Image (tube, rainbow, N blue to C red; front, side, top):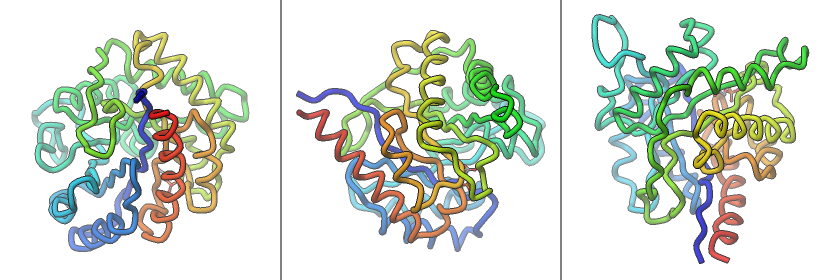
Length: 281
Ligand code: PGA
């Protein structure tokens, strides 16, 4: 019997790094070094690199595809917003999008209400969303990390209709297609070299799933993948992939390094293989 299972996802957020030429080369190198059965790979270069990365990845053989994601979209569908990019403009360039990254909350003052609109725009454009949530260090120290993350999940999804989970469009994977993936990224762990403990990330994943249930997403609360992000590297990925509540990683700095990505995806592949075996048992 084949039971449904959550996919294992490793997404790379390249942030404001790489030129189009560099990005194409890097994507091809990473794709070649990270082909592991049942791991969903997503590379998120800057907007101006999407076309080049997509073109380089389009030639991969069937069953080895690597998805392309954008790092942001605007919360309006179109309009007088100089320098912004809408969800529908990603048509043919990206099939995933990161929404609500803490660096955008910090640098662009994004609010949960805007992030909620972005999720809706992404749904309208059939993009897979990686919604980022995570507390500041002061929140964790004060014991309010759970409440902060609960509030972000609520504020970013309240009022939205969950999109249906459809079969994943890949020959190598039979789980439900995640229209929504949540990345738990404690802000104090991003780019700092300091990572959360695996057990803390797993506990937060439980809080997030509980919150999804209370939002009316109860049918999907156990199907929506939850990733950990924040200084993920080859040396700490094991700690997160060993947690059944964690379904992969959103990787920043290390995603620009092919050796690191190869090791991270290889470790993720062990968990993916174990889940695949359990699903067919
Ligand atoms: P980091 O970034 O891995 O460099 O900490 C993670 C992220 O910002 O998504």
